[in-house]
Length: 103
Image (cartoon, rainbow, N blue to C red; front, side, top):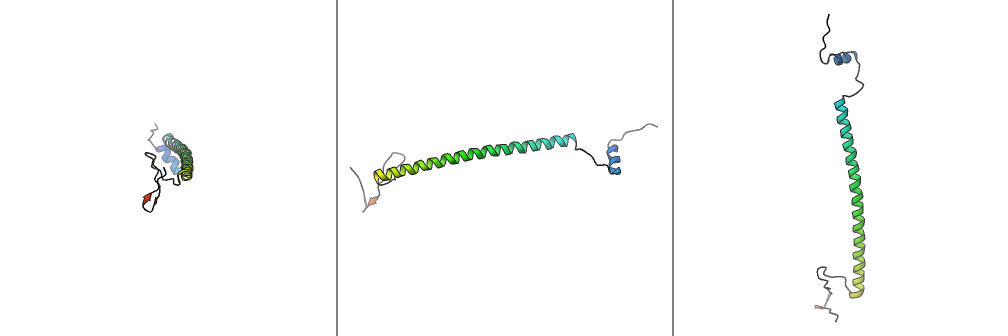
């Protein structure tokens, strides 16, 4: 009597006997590995972006400190730190409706 193999019969027999598979399929394993690798790569990218963010924020803080120093210098030298950043014009505070001009 010749045996004929029906596709999936072996798996069905194992299922009926209560035998559970030991491994996922190769395709499932490949998809799982690819997905986990992509997640890990994205986590690394997030870390790199956070480092860049920290460096940018540190630079911004340093520049703000520089502005504060310049304002203090202007206040000392000109009694105001209100300066037009386009042309350097000092905007003195108005006293009694007139601009205080030092000649």
